Length: 208
Image (cartoon, rainbow, N blue to C red):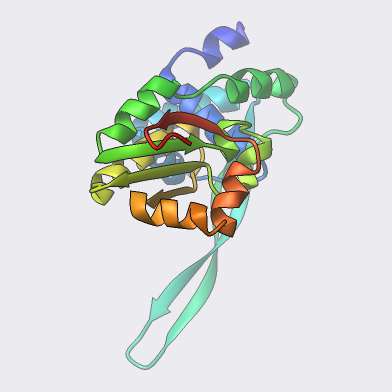
């Protein structure tokens, strides 16, 4: 079997692979995988079977709390959920990580175009995940957007689509121009934590 030919047969498969690679040790059921990768349940099952066949993922179990309500009280109950997780013994795991996590999941110009469509954008800064997918996953913020009249609902929808593409929940922050400049002038800790560490400005109309 040509494993590489199987692995890169479709975009949904790459999305699902990113999800597992960026969340090692976590167990996802079909519904989780479909929702977080933005693919249909039918397509998710197909790709899961492929990954299972080549040994990239293995079965796993996770515990989840469900809420049980009655007229008199509300209680929680633990439920075991069957799913799938990354196989740490998969022989091609390291090359896969190097290839998929270091390759930009979304081009900078495409990301910027999507973000700028949400309002009068003045500044877009990438950090955390966008600079190092593996090491930056625990960063406080992955994306800072400064602008005015930002359509929050549209931005949330765009971010969900980007998360499905990159395979990870992203931390992003929005500030209007006035608040941002005030924070810069006050040497705000949140702003310093972005600009004092590795970051990339992909759009700047403020002249920073």
